[in-house]
Image (cartoon, rainbow, N blue to C red; front, side, top):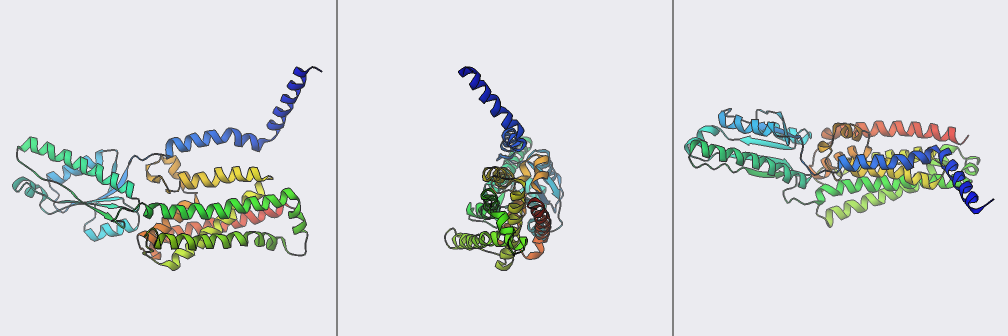
Length: 371
């Protein structure tokens, strides 16, 4: 056999080996598709369909004209017309709006006679970059309306909005990235490291030996994940101490509920790690699946870096199954906004359901896999 034939034979053998491994083929061909879709649509700093509430006590021509301009733009979606400023606070606390526009009484009359009318813009600055862009776009639309009226009525007018940043008046970026970093680190330590550790035992052939011991299989698995739970708790304490005393991010709400929701999220992440370990046989496959199925969604679809509201609807729907999204939302409510447990019931319920579901599936799959 010539060298060319030998080379051809080895090449064909390698192709057959790769094609037989369907999981590797799925990873090799699927990763580029998923990455281009996620990075192409999720990574955007544009403001799209920001949720807005408008308090308009005067209901006159001038206010309606500004409201129509705001609603007609692609940047804003006016959803609420509260009857009092107090209602606006509840809308912000429930996460239903990102911007509130407040007009003063007799807006049109003041604008025409005195040339001065007051507008206030309230923005949720838990994400300071997003808040600045939203307030800036609204201010530009208001300024455009002012220029049109000055040309139309040929009288001097002043309509400079007063901008207030809620929850983060100093506009510190740490207020935004600390909750995201908490979610990413806990997911990394719990899910990725747990899956790799258990798969390593399988590769070495020691997991079956451990399960053959007098100890119940469930306790064997539990003993494997306890160290990672402990490391995650230490990381949680470290992050909170650094956030408060170094970065100046306060725990404005309940520290107790912040710790409880963190423990719940750690449980979800550990269950994910066990589930991944039942699906793969090698540490490399565990790392690839952990990176694709956990790390990328945490970074791109959880709101950690890029606002979920700006993404296409299909990605917003997919983001609902990312546990880190709900954890980051809950952390922001407790740390940044200082809200009570009543405003985080939804996040608690979703994380609890995910934990229960993943624990059940993981234990069942793990037992079947190792029988």
